[in-house]
Image 1: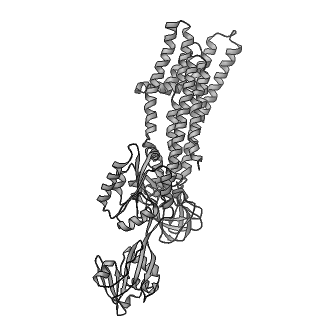
Image 2: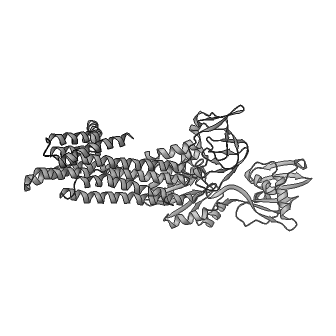
Image 3: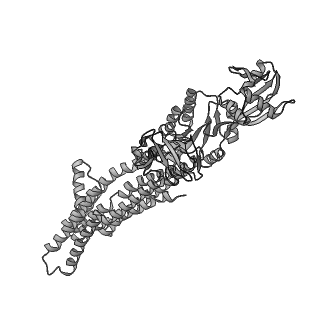
Length: 616
């Protein structure tokens, strides 16, 4: 409002000066229009001149305010009063439009997230009090009604609801939350009322961390941004030097009016302002990071977003990244005298006392209550399996080494997966095959990465080499290394890193918790399944808020579109600047065209950057 008032007042003074200049010059002393134009100039450009003086004191001489101040004060010096005040008027109008566009752009980027909660319904005895989220403590009870955002992370202690998690994950499919389920701030309760016990204060909550990541992403600049900053640092003194040459050299060596060449040099200065580049390039990357966040991809800096454009090698962890990380019975093989149901029943009873994931998957597949009163003499045979007496009969369940140890003849399964061989009273009963399921979009992700130019895809895992090899073959992964200990993963990563293309980038995709050392080696450390994982958010450069490897494709698409917009703005701004600088030097462009070449180009470049937000 203050800026608009200033522009209106300055425009009024400028209009009054123009009326006098055009219609009353002969009737009034020359200092009357001069005084009015000076008043208009001070209203419109006083703060710009003041900023220029402060910049000179700080040693930051060659910026936009310096160029505008020198050009307009110079116009006054050669008697071009209307131009001096008019340039400041149209510059301020352009700046207002530009500032409005930038504010709307940043608001749009922030609105893309749409996850900051406005309030929390705090339960205080029998009363419900509406408070700000940052006043709620761990252990407090909050109520979330249908249609409201969950303001803080917590555990559901009463109620159930379908949750819209799209603001965090980019996914439109709702998830169910019921008693004892952990829920995250930023999700929206769609169908039911939830009573939640708070587990994290607002500053440590998922929503707070995500907002902080997006807002602070600008601190890690891409090479293109750093180049533009360096370019502007050298470009501005050069054009100031050229303006001085334009003002001095022609008059000294070729004759002609000083006033005309000084006027040309002043126009040249206004045109040369590099704000289109300095403003629009960071805005483009900021828009790209905001767009990625909307799709559930948190990028911690524009340098990482830019790195996706030169992705040469992608290294995947297996469990929880390409596979679901959940063991499931995928096949049951039975011997001649047994049925599949019998084999499963025997194995479930043998694993009744174990908490190993394999044992849990067998019991889950069995799905019935186990009467442990029928079990005796349970024993774990380290490295082999287990044995138990079931209704007076001995049951063995374990690997093939157990069958060999007990001298039981068996048929080795040829299926891929972890095998549990089962025997009853020394007779082979059958085999249960347990696999870690491949995620639905893993094949698509690997295929698309290769289509988009990723040269090499590798899998590193601590899992059995045979199982790892089978999964790698199914997904068409180039190289696979299985049975690796954590330090061996680091050694393999260093080897792979040394083999990448010189200008290429290496990305490692893992869970972000157990893979911190290899995440650190990679140019881009990507954490899969980051939803609610503090360790993942802290360790990685990029966090995929869902368990989908295909989000990497979205990240590459956003990075490439952002790069295209950045270079469009660079080429457009420099082309227009060059043309208008030549026109100014040859006296064709006036101060009015100079203002368009500066503010107009900046505004168009910012609007072009906002196309990133509207991209599919």
